[in-house]
Image (cartoon, rainbow over all chains, first blue to last red; front, top):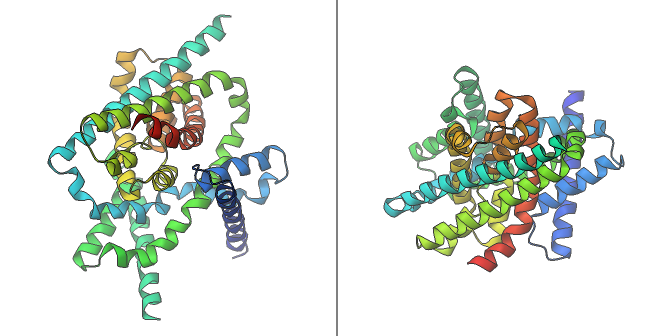
Length: 121
Length: 229
């Protein structure tokens, strides 16, 4: 019971950081999602030790462990868009796969090349 | 009061579907038994059987949706945990991830543009390489459709997991750090899970690349879209 209460308070904390991120997004009229601004904000808070790890640890582990749960309602929305993948829409799957293969190969090879050059140096 | 009760019921059902899906995944670990896929199918079946429209489901679903924001914020923690590896490999990892972000956005955009798809579909497809909650926020802010984006994210994730042995073999991608960046940049959390099973260093790098990619793509996507569309 005590642990659950702590966890809920920590999740509220994460939610407040998210709201701060959204506030910044609105304030500067940014395209970057408020949640990502919140992520960067939390990273800075942790790195500068303004917020100690232990203040949020349980809440963070809970959110990350159950990450898939939080996007179920949004993915269910595909029932309203199933028609997109009919006929010519099947091509979208091919495009998705091709683009994914390109990202994987190119980003990986660039990194591999740079790492090997450092290892040799 | 009745509406509130119904919304609560939808939330409880989603939790039940998720728990069942996690149980199934614990027993049969396959690509297609990933909890997101199974719980989504369970909820869709439930809605179809009881003839509940999506909008009605979302009176409860939006409460869960609201928690996506703090869930993304939580991803700062793995990035913080691996800050030492990140510091040592900063330049190669950030450069590779950045190149991956540009390749992902522009290839997805140009291919679907040449194939003649509508702007709505293109905007939904562009952020496919990053983790679902971030991809959906990007899609929302650039004029895409969130559920459609979720499907493209699944194609990038599950597709990437299925084709990565082939891609790595034919491109000569053998270094653990390079592989980690490739998996995290292209196939977000699903790719990271596959990397983690092979090697913890590759998996950690993949986690870093996934989170970095989420940040980089959300910064680059709006501008690149304007430029290329």
